[in-house]
Image (cartoon, rainbow, N blue to C red; front, side, top):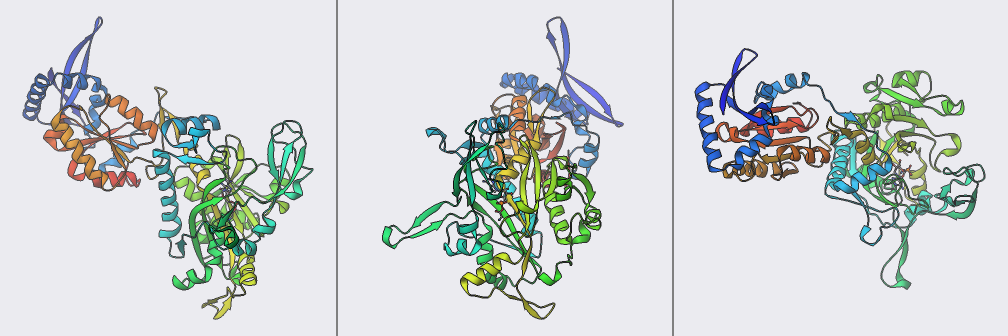
Length: 577
Ligand code: GAP
């Protein structure tokens, strides 16, 4: 083993090298970084030699991981948070995005522990899914980010958490009992089961084979249940088919308690249930799912006044209006301001909410080219909606609804007034009178559909053909993996365990000591872990660690005392390696 000096940007860096014979060739491996001072380097070399005498495995591990410490420039960006972006600007990612089919995504999710068929042990149950150790973390992170963006970071929206089963009158008032009705159909040719709207009967053909559908009668997709154990005293109730109704039913109390002034929104995340005729496409259409919904209320006389419009006028949307659909044109990219000027989007409020929802997806890593906003055709709208735009995503099975952004008008509050015989009017101080607010936009998003978008758009392969799940660190199930370079070196293990315990206080991190560092990287890249933290022999002397970035594989050394601050910045996207 010998020391070599390397000049980087005019500074001297010392490395420990060793020549190894491979067949007829002799290769020089760079085994460790020894610092910037020759004396210090000699001291470290001695320590490493002693360590190898004590533990011969240590050298073998160093050899296996020689590539990982070969990049001598790694020490350039040493330790300084503010240096991180400089280092990042020099890096080029060699990852390639891979378009997976739905089946491939389903089996990847199962293999890695994201999502399983619920009750798979007994053959599963169509339309029900369980989220595994990675899937439940990703789902929780996704919901947290949605809540942060839509509730915590705004002064005009508060949240509630309503019951899944409520008084059945709520669903009579909302129109779900009478109007939330589909027609179950079966294809005469291929026996494919599906559902169609009443008006589509006779005109829609089977999406699988083009055959004609036979009607199996109307059905209401609400699940019913009995509340109360004694049949004669019990009440037949419904599992909620949307979270939204609880917002309307609780409207007066929430507005009063939270002292909300128009315009304002009420948000909710929670489970919904629909007895779908044909649950399909993995999480896309299931029978039990979660929704993230907002009802945004305004004074109906102020439909034209959106105080937030300036924030989004220059935001570009991929627009597919009813006109474009009727004329069989393609969707067109246009700025919100332009779409409003041309009358494609009629209300400023709609432009604002459509842009806000697209923004949320794009900021968290969704591909904007696979998102478009599509206006509902006249006969497509729900029983309550006056204008509806869907945010659609180009899934492997085509452009499909990701999120509905309906304009529900005063429909729901009027219905609850009628059925409860209680007023839903509130005071609008700015005009000094009571008004019945209207819902100008109802952004309503299925958690499972958002989950799929981020999974599809994050699926990459590196140059070795290994999967790298390039999730935004805010969404990643595991924020960092902590490795001791050698698993049976007591000193390294002690530091690694301390680092792990400390980080665990703030994030979901894992401790991983099995296999070579290369294998540990690959395992964590596949799980979407954005940062791997390695404790090596230098860590003992310098009290520092390396952080390796999943997307670029670049590394920086960071003092252990600064690690949490640096990692926090990296997870929040305020710095990159
Ligand atoms: N409150 C309005 C409402 O529920 P919706 O269009 O029926 O409107 C809103 O549903 C969103 O909920 C959809 O855009 C989709 O993301 C999600 N969603 C609806 N049905 C679903 C199902 N069966 N499986 C998964 N997600 C579903």
